[in-house]
Image 1 (cartoon, rainbow over the protein chains, first blue to last red):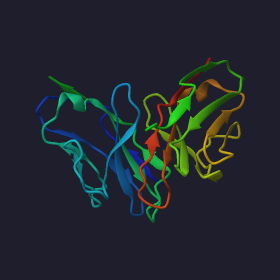
Image 2: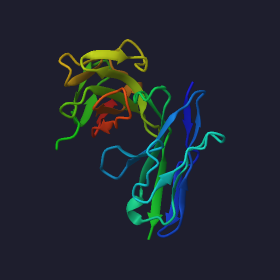
Image 3: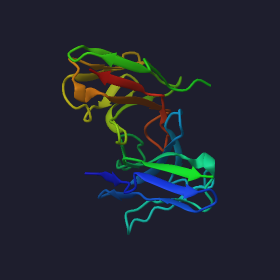
Image 4: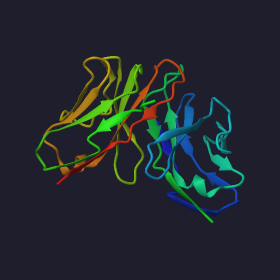
Length: 112
Length: 115
């Protein structure tokens, strides 16, 4: 079975401080990991995926297979980063992108 | 361009009634997904379609839930004899395809409340 754990329900930081949103997963194969974000009054949207190895809005995430983690990091948080963040896993091999398994989400608040 | 749309945005119904939730995917998107999100939880997969074919319905909780996409575009998720535990946000997503790293684009969701 595949499972995604986001241990923090709430995370509050000050503007300019580093932020790390934790995500751990359980999957026996080779997973694809994603971070989705939902800003206030907006729909859920993809932030980044591990296969792209890109930085979006200053956020990065590295897949650590040894620790089964995919933590989301940003060195200097901005107030506009305040949102709900979901880590998600696609456990189907071969690149098929469906049946995402989501964590429960972390609500990030960046204070001025 | 237009994104994924869902209707109604909010639905309040009495226990025992049937409800139909509609999803209109992005034009040209082959794959369509339904998720359910209870309060305080992440979205949970229900079912998915490629064109009009339902490929996986393993996430549908019981036989009161069904989904269709008869012409490979708009999809309807139907819940029969609703129960209070069905109250949740129902999210629809679509993607260009399924056999590759295609992004899933989500709609605004339908908030269902069963009283």
